[in-house]
Image (cartoon, rainbow over the protein chains, first blue to last red):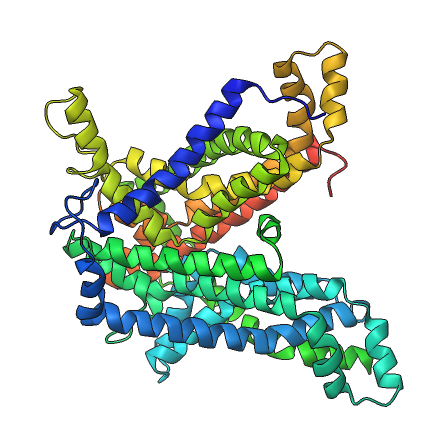
Length: 262
Length: 274
C-alpha cells in the first residue's frame, strides 16, 4: 500500500501543473486569432499567421539558419564527442579524472559570458564568416550533452565484447563501427536529439555571434517582439512546440521518457 | 600506449573546449585586470556606479526570490508526483519535461500575452470588476520573477522527483505508525532526505536565473535591467568592452561562489553526501 498524500497537497500540485500548461495553451490560442494583435481567447480562427511566417523573409531565413546550425553543430559535436566519451570509458584508468569535468564546462560557465567571450576573442579580429563562428559556439554548447549521454550509454557497455572481436582479428575501427556503435545507438540518437533542441532554442550564445544577414530564430523572435505585437510570434512558438513534441516522441522511442527526468 | 590512444581520441573535443571556452573566457576575465588605471579600476568603476550596483543587487534579489519560490513549489509538487500511481507519474513527468524542452524565448513570450495591457489577466480582472483600468504589469520586477519561476519550476520538479522517489514508502508508514502527523513526517523524514536534491536544484535555478538574458529582456526591458541584459547592453549597444568584461567577470565569480557555497552547505546538512 502506498502512503496517502494529503488532499490539499494534491490540489496544490494540480494548480502548479495548470500554471505550467496554461501559458503554452494561451500561446497556441493566440496563434489562431484572427486579429492583428495578440489576444486570448482568440477572436475568430485563422491559420493566416502560420502562412505569415513564410511570408516574412526574416523568419524564413532564420528558421533555415537555425536548422542548419543545429544539424551541423550536433553532427560535429557527436563527431568529436563520441571518441571522447569512448576514451573516457575505455581508458578510464589511464586518463585523469578532471577530463570528464572539462567536457561539461560549457554548461557550467554562464552561457552569456561564453557568448560575449567568443565574440571578443574569436569573432572580432578574425576573418571567419559569421556562420562559422556561430557554428563553433553552438558546437561548444551542445558538446556536453553529446559526451554525457553517450558516456552514460557506454557505461553499461561491456568492453569485453570489443576485446573479443579484436582478438579474433577484427581491425579496431571496424570493431568500433560493427560492435560498439550498434550497442550505443540509443544513446547516440538521444544525444543528437537533445543537442539539436538545445541548439535550436539557444539565445545567449547566438545573441553575440549573429550578425548582419545571419541570425537564428530565437534572436529573430526577440527582435520581432520588440517592434510588433502581432500573432506571428505565437505561431512560430507553436511550430517550436511541435518540434518539442517530435523530440519527445523520438526520445520516448529510443530511451523512454524517464531518461529525461535524470 | 593505451594512455596515448585515450588522449588522441579526446583531443578534438579537448581542443574545442580549450580554444573556444577556456582561452576566450580566461581572456575576458584577465582583460579586466589589464585596464589602464590599475588592475582593479574596472571593478572600482562598477561599484562606484549607483546604477550598476542597483543592477547587481536587483539580479541577486530576483535570483534569490526565484530560487526560494521554485524550491517550495517544486518540492511540494515533486512530492505529489513521486507518490502518484506509476501511470500518472509518467504523465506528470512528461508534462514537466515538455516546458523544459520548449525554448526560453517561447516560454517568456507566453507571459507577454498573459501580463500585457490587453493580456488575459487584465481582461479577467476588468471582467470581474476588481480594477477599472488595465494594470501595467509588464516591465516590473514582479513580472520578471513570475516568468523566471515559470521557467525553473519544471527543472526543480524533475531534479527532486528522482530524489523523492528514492525515499521508500515504508519509511513514511513507519513514521506514521509511530505517531507522526503527516506534517511532522514531511518535515522530519522527507525533508532531510531530500536535502541533496534541494541543493542541486537551488544551484541550478540560482545560477540559471542570475545569468538569464531572454526573460528579463522580454518582461523587464530597460526598466528592469539585470546583469545579463547589462552585459549585452554594454557590449552591443555601448561598445564598452571593458565594462562588459567586468560584468562578465562578476557573473563568473558569483556563479563560482554560489556553487562552492552550496556544496559546503550540502556537506554540513548531509555528511554522507560527497
